[in-house]
Amino acid sequence: EDQVTQSPEALRLQEGESSSLNCSYTVSGLRGLFWYRQDPGKGPEFLFTLYSAGEEKEKERLKATLTKKESFLHITAPKPEDSATYLCAVQATGGSYIPTFGRGTSLIVHP
Amino acid sequence: KAGVTQTPRYLIKTRGQQVTLSCSPISGHRSVSWYQQTPGQGLQFLFEYFSETQRNKGNFPGRFSGRQFSNSRSEMNVSTLELGDSALYLCASSGGTGVRDTQYFGPGTRLTVL
Image 1 (tube, one colour):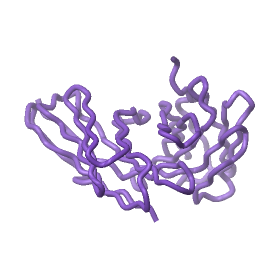
Image 2 (spheres, helix red, strand yellow):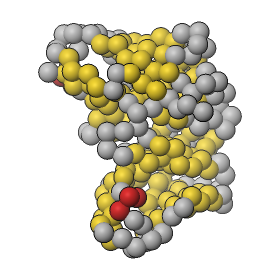
Image 3 (tube, one colour):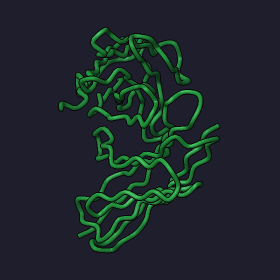
Image 4 (cartoon, helix red, strand yellow):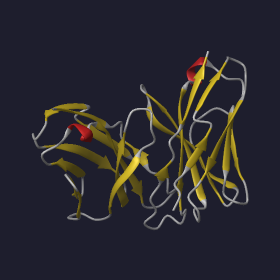
């Protein structure tokens, strides 16, 4: 069974204090790994897709990296507007195309 | 390109009633998936429709059903509502081919069951 575990569950940072969120996964074969950002009461907003180990993608203060067992979402010099829940999902090869989601990391950035 | 839209955004129902939620996918997307999100359980997959056929189904009771129309718009129905059905219901659309396929989510429908 595909499994996705995100850590930490919650993270509080001061503005400008860089950190990383972790997404570890267990799948028979990885088709793709997705990162989403979700604000309270809203739908998840797509951030990145990573397909193979060693791949990296960046968007403003966010950088996502991928290894064979985990992905990291690095947040550099965060601002209060980066506060949100960040969700990780994996899509496995074979079977259905439905991604398996982690429980998310709730990030709060204090000014 | 317009995003995924969901209507209504908010609903309040009482136990025993039924409800229908609607989702319009991104133009050109043929796959529509439905998820239930609660604080305790996170995002849980309900079902996926592709070309008017249910292609995948999650582990939810038969009270939860859906359909997809020829224009790819989808509806989800919940009958005999229970208090535990209170949740944010999310719709996601994608191309549906599975190859480098990314799901894009709508804003959700907040359902409250009293």
